[in-house]
Image (cartoon, rainbow, N blue to C red):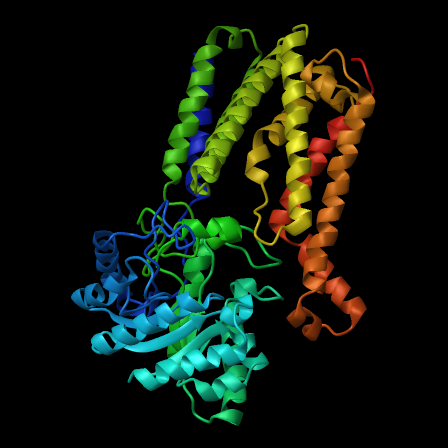
Length: 562
């Protein structure tokens, strides 16, 4: 009866925690009529992508455009000739959509000529649908063409179609190559506060967009007064790596879009939101953050609404159910042994068990959602399996400590081995982040169990031994492991700390090398200080550094035999 009561209280607490941390949030005024002015449309689904030349079927595009008819008045496309892209204008007309049609340009001349020919044909064949044409997207930013080559393509399209013609790139490219302003009928700029050299918070983003628009407008008016400007891309990622104070999240994505529309309406700005659907193929180049800018997930489920409040995780109740089921399995398996524990020790064990079950369910959901290929899913399965095994072993060790049982050598050896493997995994991942981490997410979720597990063992060890000595914190003592090589443990511990320091340095260096960051802070010492502040106040980075420190501590105090 006592165990049943405690279990019921823990389950209730788990449910309340899930509910409280996933309350719907107010993200600003509703989008008028629930429809956007224009929305970037790339119809790729899971397993499809332009790099592999795997394109959606006309039927899939038709289904997507039916959804778009509910969300936007117009769509912006990026390619015209590839795969099934030529069917888009006719299907867009079917669903009452207008188009800003794009021609994708790269470094291969033959492909460019094919794209140019198709966008000209399509614009002339579908004048009621294709209202504007964009020749090239960020081709100068990528360095695929020289400005002179791009201008020739722009001129060719302008001679051949009646619609206004433009070129799209990040706003600074129009500042760098002002000759483009004379060539286009309207200026198309991308303003993506998340990707700025000096990252912008979601609350600062509206002011930033307005300032950049005015800056470009002032430059344009000095060259070609009154030329229209289209914000060709603006949006916010719903998941992925934090940059400085720019935090990806579903709530922030929804908040950004609503604030952008308020700014656009107030100032009469022409805009296009990026994007309609999450693009899983982009994860190969831009990581998790590149794949999560859509209003819909890759499997066409709405990520957030354009009206009303927004949930960061609308499926949170499924996580509560999964973690509760895991917890109940643990309780059923331990029912008899648990009867021998005192009420205090029983309560702590049950709370610890529920916490590990919750973390395991959360980790699996998080990693699976951000896996976009069979290889990534295999890695997720291996990581989740290793975490589940370690969680079970840690709980078995926790019970042994509470029951004052003699350490089991094989159990201790398994815990120690898995812990060292996770520590090595953390060193490897941190090295990758320090080497080139612009698109790599912090792998915090992958080490939930070893980090929280070892903290739990520390607390339980103190409760049972009442010792304040650092030796009680060493991994061998916590795991009940009899033999170890202390020097090797310490090397791993120092490697974790060194990699953490290297990560801070490299994170700061990335800001210091950025052109706009240098312009914003010309004084070297001030620039270094601001870069360090951006780095050490990055909550995701701090979370990962804390994981490294917690993993390192039991290794650094290692002193040989138990």
